[in-house]
Length: 64
Image 1 (cartoon, rainbow, N blue to C red):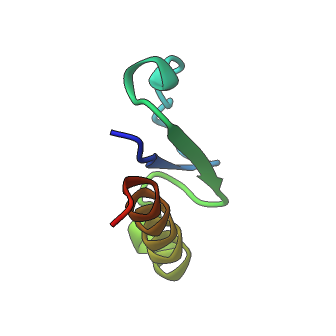
Image 2: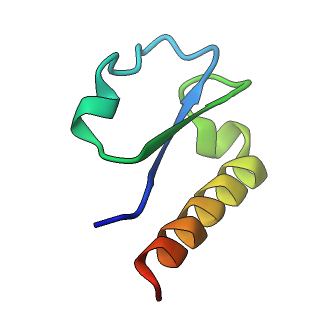
């Protein structure tokens, strides 16, 4: 598969992001937002925009 995955992380999150995420998720794009662990509740519009943009890039990469 040639698509990308998007991993959103809060800059103030107390849960550490996997340091080797890129080794397990091909084409991952890590996005850090200015919030805590609950990114969907804290920044819903920004989270939705980033998810939709990632899905559009994945769809374009797959040629759909």
